Amino acid sequence: MVSFMFSIEVVNDTERRDAVHRRLASDNTERSSVLRSLRGTPAEDSVPLQVYATGEDGELAGGLVGYVQYHWLHIDYLWVDARHRGTGLGGRLVADAEETARLRHGCVGSRVETWDFQAPDFYRKQGYRVVATVEDYPPGVTDYTLIKSLTP
Image (cartoon, rainbow, N blue to C red; front, side):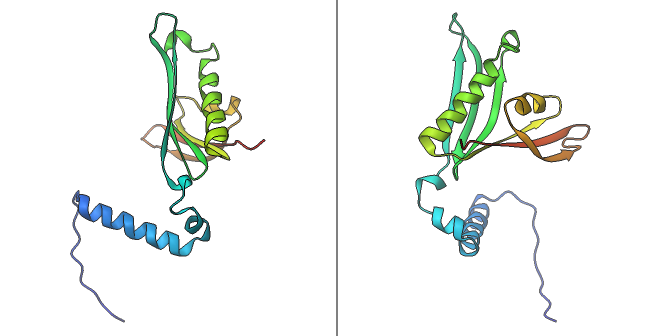
């Protein structure tokens, strides 16, 4: 058996972080024919996708912030002003983002993470299904990952 001595550090280091990222991407490309086929294509790029709603008064009523990558829509944030909740505005923002992702970027699916006190039921109503839960993330809260197919 070969024994190695390592120096282990807990430190924020941009240069080493970037090196780890590059090396992992290289390993992933080597091991996955799917990722290999996507490398260097527009599908590999993370492209912002944002949808906003403003009221008649010009004030922000709601918004969805996400990105598309690898033919998937990733929803990072969805917010609707309390005065407009229950009006269907959130569903419209999600539907517009999904349609844009599918038609402009060729997305085949959408994914989102949400906490139990936020919107898991809302996303279920939009056709999403739960694929993962993490209890106590943060402690006392359950985190949900939901996905939806965007193919007709």
